[in-house]
Amino acid sequence: MPEIVLIVVFTISLLILRKTRGYYDPSLAGQIGMAAMLIVTGLAHFGFTKGMEMMLPDFLPFKRELVWITGVLELAAAAGLLLPKFTRLTGWLLIVFFVMILPANIYGAMHHINLQTATYDGSGPGYLWFRMPLQLFFIAWVYFSAIRPRTIMQRRRLEEEQYRK
Image (cartoon, rainbow, N blue to C red; front, top):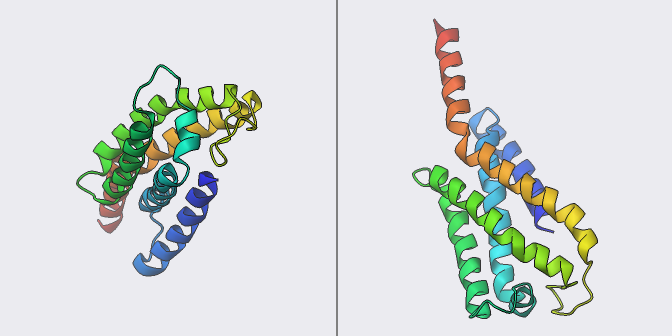
């Protein structure tokens, strides 16, 4: 479950950042957590290629290549989140990406795809009650850790400057 990787790495990063910098930096810890999750899910595109191919509708050509490309995109996004110059742009692109892959998740659930075993014995439509909110959670996570933190960090700096005066 990628969301577990996200939460665990976020928590560990938050604590390490507190210890090394002297303050909590939830935005950076959030970026690190999301990057770790994207590495896990990106690599899964190469380990569970057949199952992920099955999540794509029949009318799409080059399914294997699409799975590999999206895996590479997730790995690139992990790097982009950790490069300050690209964090914000990567955040916006990730939100678009998360919206664009939702139909594949819906298709996979409706067809009972088990992506790990590449069989038709998956959870089925009931999984969507978990997956749809999870997708929104990922989108919100990226927004608040990679896109919006500029305003949060700016506000923090202004508060610090006013405190010093």
